[in-house]
Image (cartoon, rainbow, N blue to C red; front, side):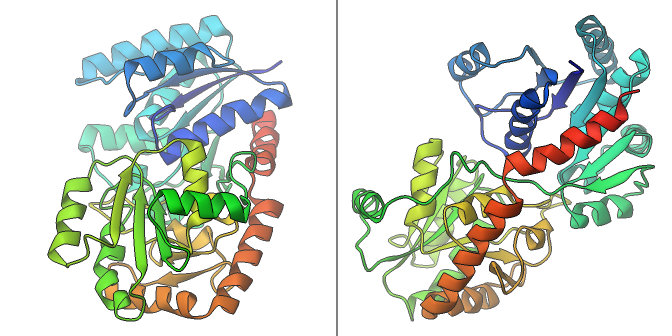
Length: 383
């Protein structure tokens, strides 16, 4: 069995798209007869949650610690290189900026091939001259650089990344966790959350942050409430920006329509998707940080929901414009409101897009299908 070491800047049980991708990658490669080892940061979860999660992981888990200085960074790189060598790694894979730097150094020290996965954030922010040099060298010299979207590749090229062997593999979602619920279960869930049968619900799943763009749906609500007085908006995810979003909702006179419910279990998230009338994620570029693809859009699609997304990110590749969702102008509340209203008003169009979104997700974008592409690619990288 070939052995693979994955280094990731995020990993469950805490939330985050890079972590979700990394877990799907490792657990999806096991049925293809890969033996994995994980090196990762695990944040936004309690020590007890992390310990319990790692105890049940079907592979060894090594912590990727924060390195505040260059000396600490180099020391950790050599330590990890030793552990990877002892493990007998045939391939090293980096996911996320700092994890990719370590993957590059570990592969160089151990003379092994390495692949990097570019999500988005890695290519919009500077870390200073020395680390920018390391960054460019690591990505340009990779035996394979996998981008999660064409938009991410375009942003990487603007940063000076010109890899030898680039490819695009879109993200997927777990069809075993996200699927349509029965109408009885949906109505029971909505009732528990204080929603009437006639209430319409917009939903965003993801960290509450400027990049995820919950702010712009909230700013669109005053335009929408005039037509849809029973409209509500729920934000599910890590509440790092909750206070600012709640203050904005209060200032706009929307506190009764905005529900910042925070972090939820996977089962709860599935029910939120099913309870929603429409999925929205109006991500915005924030200091070089951008949305590379949008796994939550595919999760919503697997639950039978179409989406409204912003037009200046990899989210455009998570939908097929006009077929599985609609795009709205970034940071434009009026246009976002118009786009959302179009689908709230036209239930026939919305149902058509919902059906097509679900069919596309099931046929092309489950992790099972996506990871078959990773398996084939990784096989070619091993001598």
